[in-house]
Amino acid sequence: MIKACIFDLDGTLTDTLESLTFSVNETLKEMGLNSITSQQCRQFVGNGARVLMECALRASGDAKLVRIEEGMQIYGRIFGENCNYHVAPYDGVAKMLKELKARKISLAVLSNKPHRQAVDVVETIFGTGVFEMIQGQCDEIPRKPDPAGVYQILDRLGAEPGEGIYLGDSEVDMKTGKAAHLLTIGAAWGFRSREILNASGADAVIDHAEELLRFL
Image (tube, rainbow, N blue to C red; front, top):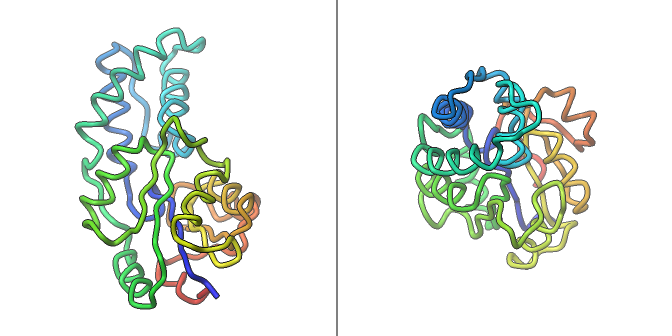
């Protein structure tokens, strides 16, 4: 019996690619470096802000990452101001969440996005009270694919791993869910391909948010 659903954020609940690309490119512009494409950004996201900026700097010519600390400082400021830039929920997500709430399923978000921005995006797009817990990247909890964040959320929600579903859109998410022994579902509408999700251990891959309901 499923008691809890834990969701990734970027590429799973919300389409944040434009906000991420915009913030990265504004950072690179301020640093006097070349911009990246949205397709490059799509491939760079998933492992947290620092990895995103490391990839962006390498793509822009800073192969040795000599300016990474400068980049992180600038990106933190710019992204903090623009984390909701053109962000929208994916089709069917709001309806899916409403149905899960109606079925008394506990909901949570676990993201490698910085914690403050993760909360900002979730509460701006979905309002407060939809999710019982929102956890973004912070120093106290290892980032995904370490399952520590999943276990903390399950403990807070009063659920065991066998009573949970993890939905995400990347290889990082599939490894996270499997490491925590949750039913791990890939979101084919997100930032990675169906092939990558399957190769990363997804128990199933779905094409539309409302398909998640068949696993309850």
